[in-house]
Length: 403
Image (cartoon, rainbow, N blue to C red; front, side, top):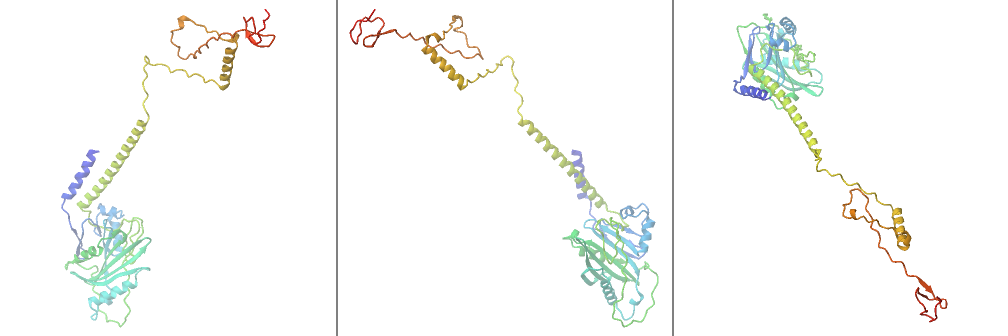
């Protein structure tokens, strides 16, 4: 356990010591364009090779499969970032010949493209911003709109720009709920400001369109949106017009670079800290259970040991006499007091006079004191007075008693 926490602490200290990279340079040689992305983004280009970790992360089995799908959808670059989560892709195709005339300036052409894009927005889309953004590399037609997808809001931003008769489309997508409090517009404009063109590079198609005469038509030119298959883990393919990233969360098409060293260490540190938190919670639960068991054991008193030498049996409780037995005993006692014949004669044993009373024996009742028999009387036959037995004359009438 101590080694585990020491390893996690060492990784965190290593993260603080490592130098932080603000950006990573990317280039698309076929288009002669280079730009910078925030460090840690995963990228995919057409020249990806077999064995690149980006193929597995984006769901491709081989470099050939990735290249074929990117060529079919006219995509040249995919990238995604995890925190905050957003997707970026770059597509390119030859610009429509009717856009290049002597009567249209570049800003007017971009305005026509912007109107056509707004007309072709998906149903339920809300335009958040439309403007002409000027960057060091040139002017860009900027359109930002949002589309509700269930309980989430998908925000799509497109940057259209033209270079060497080639139309480039840079598309960014993010969920508003997952990026609250983050200046996503600042991140995207920073990427656009870093775009540079290599004049020695060739355009996407080495064909120069012939100039055509302008036609007086106020209707905006309809431009088909370029496919941007950003496939989430759920499996659905999304397009630039819908801007759907999918509720699965992870992107399945995009990246030619590698995750930076700092990003890999951050991911490893997060995994280690999560495991340490799980172990800590398990230890706390174990300690709680041990404390509860100790409290339960303390609530039950231990048995008291008995000394067989000093142990004395408890006295046997005497039965309580009932009311009827008490009445019978009192009646017999009264009878014994009045009738000398029924008086109990106590048995006195000198040997047992000083012996202690045996424990558990019924208590002995003391014999009542003996009462002398009442004296005999004679009745005077003359007056009926009661006279002592040895009287010769009646003390009432004075007559002599018969012998």
